Length: 388
Ligand code: ATP
Image (cartoon, rainbow, N blue to C red; front, side, top):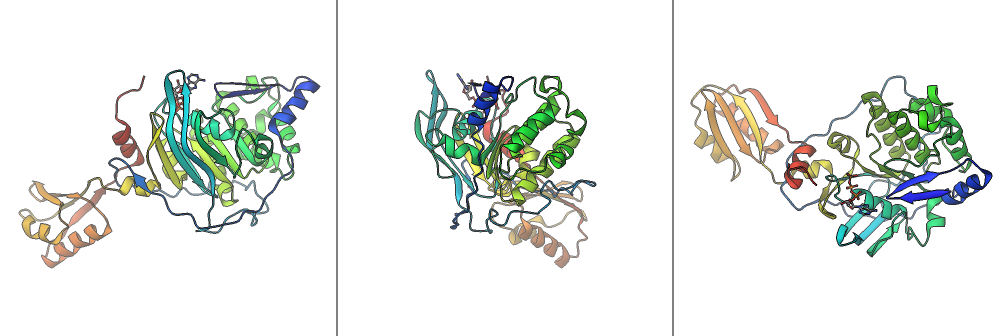
């Protein structure tokens, strides 16, 4: 049987009846669809002050094997620039009593991308995601997932999506491997279970009952269950919460492979570095509304001041330097020979400063740009106070 309470899904497999219910509940039947493609406009709207940042490339971990031995699925991976929206939420409102957990929220997720939904505790992330999964009903607004209504079309939608809830979702007595193999058998083209277990570090605990797994192992099993059926779209609610650094990296690597395979992923996370590493699009929610969205670069770049520092000979003519720089840029000599340029620091500004130094015979040394991260942007937008 399946119970859903505040988004927690428990599936009981202890009895044949329970198993039947589980099959019905997951609705896992063979379904594959092609997708018509059309151009989707790039999003990048910041409703509050952002700052620049840099995305780091994470090397592939040594010794890792792909869980997609056949490579990506060409029928599913959309070409760049031809990405349909697969999740469309408009004006979503969800109330609990007098309180609006979600208050007129708009969200669009493009096919084949990773979208990270960020927000302080209680911002409405889980409510939004679980409404898209069909586990909560919207009070108003429209929600379309793969073109379907998540509640009315649940039977058609569920075979095509993978869901990792914030916690729960697995019968406590089921063994990890049994559960995963069972789930794999319900799908037409499941991932290789052994490879998936190896990838997620579950190889040694396959015979352990779910309730006896560590928190991190439970988390990894929940992720494996969400992706084993090769869904077109996965919703992952805080997929790396409680994972050790190795498991976190393995999870990231797996998510990259899913994306390369054409799978669309929507994840909620409190880890800003995770969003920077993985997400094509970031949506920041506060008090049930979207307060900013865009790529990590767009969010980190737009508008806010950054700082460039360098050292040179003392007493440079900063008035002359400022004439070469865009309006709104400030320059100061903090201590003899130590300079700070503040403003919208971009590659052009860096080149102008270097060129001015060259023209004036200044050997600029120790040039550094102070990066602002997604965490800076997040805190700037949502404040630094704890939420009740
Ligand atoms: P977190 O980061 O802590 O997981 P969240 O952004 O996912 O938070 P939600 O779980 O969506 O936030 O909750 C949004 C608001 O709705 C919170 O104030 C929460 O207390 C409230 N809420 C969520 N589910 C219910 C429910 N079933 N009944 C009453 N209130 C609820």
